[in-house]
Image (cartoon, rainbow, N blue to C red; front, side, top):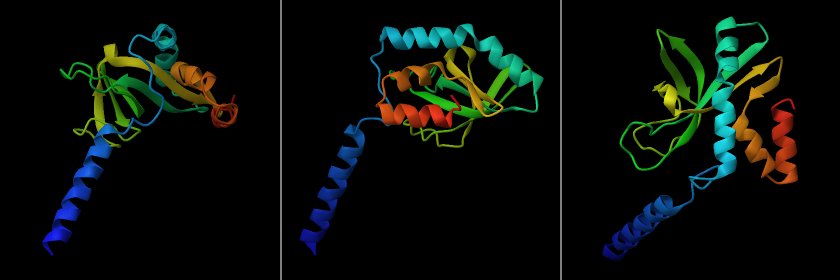
Length: 158
């Protein structure tokens, strides 16, 4: 029985180590990748298009989302770029629901979060089933395999 408990403890430790060292989901870029910086700047420069569409609440517009740094302003060393959907902006306060499982253990997918404007790096919405924004996504599609790129473009209506 003692050997079984030791084996279970070793397996648990190995599993925790694997989880800790496993690469994050999604595509990873260097912190100073110039392509990523260009995509983020394009998104920031065109953010008024997002706010105008959100405020207009037109019948064909849906699925408003913001990609932002979840760890921005929290004193953490790592950035975590993540999508929030169901965006609202009331009295200057931006809120959304985390659309992906976060790495930061203080949060869970679906959590409602407040988004600091300085943390926003991309935006999206669909107009009549065609995605708008997605500046970082466009970069990721360029770097994807042809099959993955084709599937992503189809899902985004491009």
